[in-house]
Length: 423
Image (cartoon, rainbow, N blue to C red; front, side):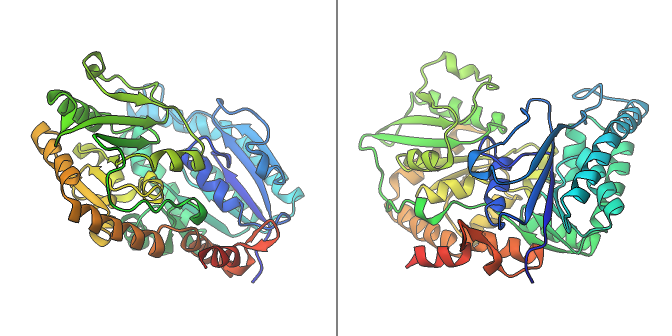
């Protein structure tokens, strides 16, 4: 079956500026140039226009999405306030829905592909799909109950949102999900098949750097991406500060790639060895991370985050492994990264905020050469079996109900191109 002409109905444009943008960018590359159009209803911080030059061939409309947050987001909003916000949001979506339906009709699309990243897109995807009477291919990155709570909705209103989520999924035969944990839950609750989609780094960017430390008397810890687990990162900084940023005879340096503007780290006033290097494109981030001795992967330890840590998946893990880095996972045991590391032991884990436990885990990976060697072997296995573009594309093809040989890159079968690159 050939790829149907597809409408990407999305709250995030394909691009390079965020995890969601990169995820969509890499999937958009799979489409023949006459098979994809995009209607992006994004936050007001986006500028209308083409998101990235290499995808300029995609016909695209970009509009502003109404705010999803309650007036009292971050505080305790009443049910009445939440219901009013939800109702107002849906009214504000009506003209966008009308425009998306007209656009899809004019573009003669045959199916809808949509990341259900929040209450607004869940509603929009459902109504547009029902009005067009077309197949819906949804993708879920984060559990909607967690997203809705973070937007400030109370328990009763969240239940209404989850009911519409169920109604939207009922229009689908298959759903793309972030992790095995999310796959199990959605398949059980909604009786539809799910494909786990973990974005991966192109093979030609992989760095095979062996198991040894890279920096002589210095030990560099790399971190890339958004800083959301701030309590965990602060605990590591405090632990290293308590020993003067020296461990196992090595000077420790933390190198952060990403946006640190939201950080409020009280230890920065002390003697710290931290470098903030800003956002880097994927290829450059992999190259720079390959110069580190270890990659830091924090996840929330607080119980209130138990749902996302079990169902979401940190895409930075694929970047870390592509860069050839052992991983220092810092988060709860009951989580998607731990499930992955049980299958592929690509690093060490720490499930505590206590300084002595953190330092012991770091000292172990610095001093234990056989451990680093076994991690290097597990890393190669994880990349070859799971975190590679061939697997990513094959699962996306299954989600679309097509053969992966239909995917193209500059006119060449992308699956075939990967096979050539592996030889």
